[in-house]
Image (cartoon, rainbow, N blue to C red; front, side, top):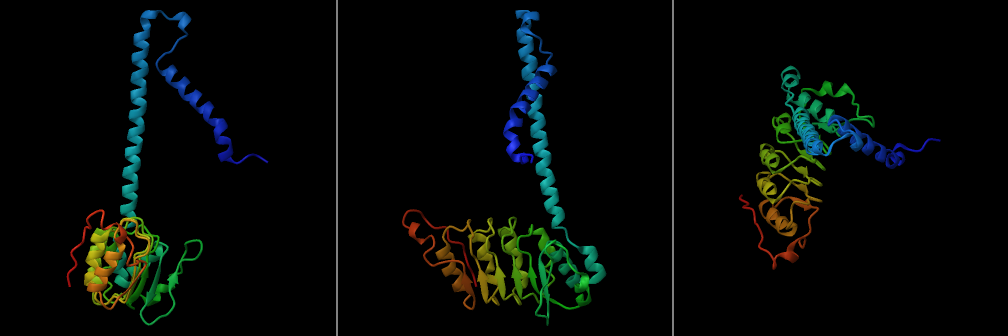
Length: 263
């Protein structure tokens, strides 16, 4: 049986390096030293350096285009489903957006969630509830950004919102959640790497919150202090995932940046 491709790579790499070297030498017109005069050496070195400069310039161009492609792809995944909203209404459009991101939705008056299967496919049965308000949205592990929230902001009866492990969710996006201040009861932000105490400070608008999951937020250093402050401005909310002593042991060594929380 043939060896796995990864195991064959160390044997291939020396040949690749040799091939790259031969290509560079071919480009600059390298010739055997026995047939070259010493006066041509500066010219050959100049041509080698010029070719290497072009080679690395091409690499930078490829990396630049790769970065632009990733940005474009992220914006595409967070596009507003405005056309679907015009045809079928905001509830159906929001449900379609969440399911297309391998998430889940729950309609008002229903216990069961509509979710994708193991292959990422979903049933279109949710369209029979296109006029029923959405009470639950699960966009965990999705590429949700500030722009993607355009698909959710019209859900005035939303009670549950799960945004666990969203790698692109940031403080700017959290500032938009105030539109759910009259309905949202459950919110999970666990595992979102870019959320800081500044974003959490904007949650004071959500006075209906009963459960807030803030587990595993690596960009929030003083978790104990943030939990105390959030409990003060959200007195009816159970905050989980943070301990009162998380980060407080370092307060004597460095000053704390305390976000302003208002009622």
